[in-house]
Structure formats: C-alpha cells, structure tokens
Length: 105
Image (cartoon, rainbow, N blue to C red; front, side):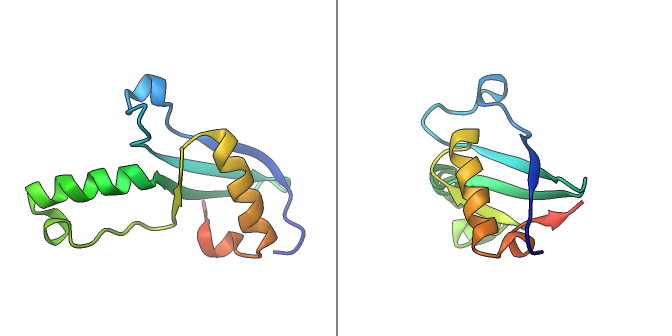
C-alpha cells in the first residue's frame, strides 16, 4: 500500500470515562480511516497493561497462569493517548508495515 494517506484516527476508549488507571494500565482499539475511506483496526496496549494482565492471569489461571499473552493486531505503547498513538501509526506506515499491523474492517 504505497502512499497511504490517513484521514482520521479514532481510539475507542477514554481513560476518563472507562476509569482506567492513570498509572498507564490501559488498552484501546484504534481505527484508522484512510483518505479513500478504507477502515483499519488494531489493538493498542500499554506495557503496564500487559504486566498487570500477566499478574491477574497468574491468579486466575488464564493463559497458563500468566505464562503467555497474545492478541490479534497488537501494538505495545507507553500510553494509550492520541499524542503517542499518532506518531506510532505514522512510523508503522513509514516502515511499510501498516497492513501487517492493522486489519481491514
């Protein structure tokens, strides 16, 4: 997909509304609308969210008691904010990996 042009980026969670931790334990789905109208999605998780989830899974027994975790179209970031996500998406596009990371809706 040469020359990808982004029209809009939406994040599906709002830490204020979702009562997610201000300490960065966050996750969100990100929808990217391209200039041609095509929509793509990926799930963004903070590193803190993954560690928190691992500890919870140790207690619940999920994912072999926290021994692994996976997610489709998963991107790890420091924070689930547009200020962090926007340049991450731009870098993924610049590296030519957009369709490897994002799935078409």
